[in-house]
Amino acid sequence: MDISIKITDRRGQTHEVKVPTDMGLNIMQVVQAYELEPLGTVGMCGGKLMCPTCQCYVQNDVGLPEKREEEVGTLSRLLHVKSNSRLSCQISVTTALEGLEIELAPLF
Image 1 (cartoon, one colour):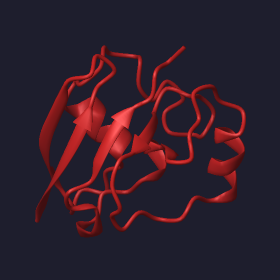
Image 2: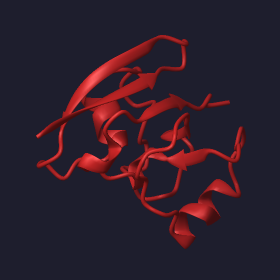
Image 3: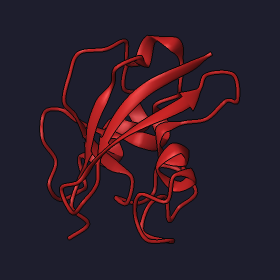
Image 4: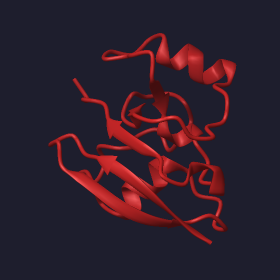
């Protein structure tokens, strides 16, 4: 099953994308697959919770997984953190994310 997600890139352009829920993807990988940002500027650590490049702001209330301790720790060291900040590498694509809207955080 595919779900729809809206992703606003760092230039302010919003993209509505269809994402399969049966491939084990996370939101960082979706941004990479759709090439919404230049190569190498999202997910530089490969989703290992070690960099700020996949930080995003969740704009609406959908069925997100809870933040794990490691994600909270990484977010505490980043710039541009808001109350709705998440690391997109930690958000697995599931049917609960239907209608998710995120904005990618600035890099610097």
